[in-house]
Length: 96
Image (cartoon, rainbow, N blue to C red; front, side):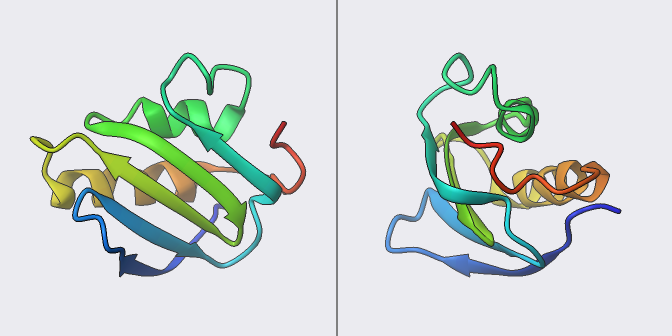
């Protein structure tokens, strides 16, 4: 069963959105500032494959996605939802 996005919330940063999820994805904060840093984290590495994603924060039942300034939110939101919907299993505790 995939991970469902319950809500998408704005942040003070126009290039960041908070994706609130239906279950926890990380029991400790996990920040990734580039794809290389996320290479050993299965979910984060899939999210970095989304064009325009520049950094991620995973904590509890939310993921904050930062985008490059020139990237458009509609495509990123759709792609992030798709990645999460395809995730299988309990990711809690995967963060290192």
